Image (tube, rainbow over all chains, first blue to last red; front, side, top):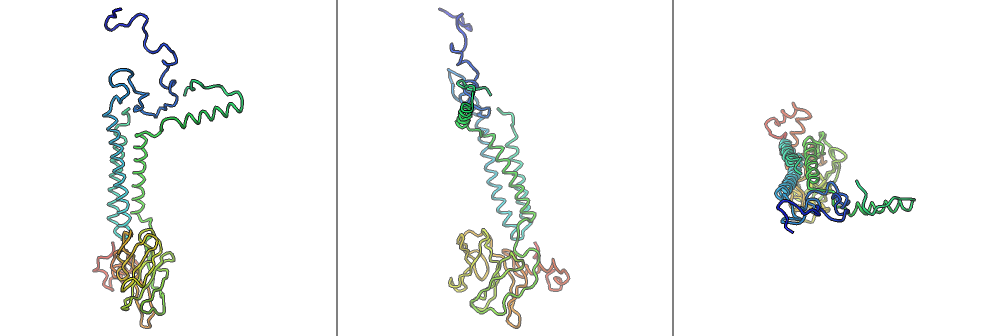
Length: 122
Length: 210
């Protein structure tokens, strides 16, 4: 039977013949939480076809990972600054300790930026 | 949240308990609740905590040996060559020791390790002057200068300025911080206690008080 382009056969309907398979994702997979994230293929898989089962926007995922890596790296730098500040203060070099605190505060602002730069990026 | 497909309505305590067990099993087997955005929030919180910690340290919450001033204290009537005496100076939490080295030099140090605050011991048989040894993590300090010679301590030992009077009694008269010159430490304390006397003692020209 020939099917005109853009049309379905009369007896065709999207989805499955079994109603239980046509329920929303959350009903079919109660284990999936709202926080599971789009990286869960059960949430974002586009179904049969090219690219099915993969991230739909991998560049956004990479940016998020880069933000986490950047923030963790900065926190490691803050730990180092705290040891320098402690040593400086114990030696009586109070000015050096305050400079380390200023460095730590500036680092915190960068971490805040990395965190809040795109709060609605889902 | 909608109920699972095969859920059932509990009829009695047994069924209710079974339902709770099933719900717990379901929750445990669910996906991880910590996302990368959660990690970002956690890391940002830790970062803010480190800023607070650094501010508190710079503001002076940590105790330094000798803080609060030091008045002279007689620690021994006599201290022979190769002998040491331990005492608390200037406060009762400031453990210290005085050592008479084999050449007669009198030195004094805080006996609290600058690594993790364990007690420091003088090992007389290590070298000509012996060494100051922290048994917790094997930190070592030079007995003549207090400098770190080995192990993890990040700073030299704070000094206690020792003098001997005409009758041979040993006195502690002041303290010096890690890496600070003894005269600078005495001048710093004297400036805080009696600026006029400090100036008369020639401390005005010293660049000591940091």
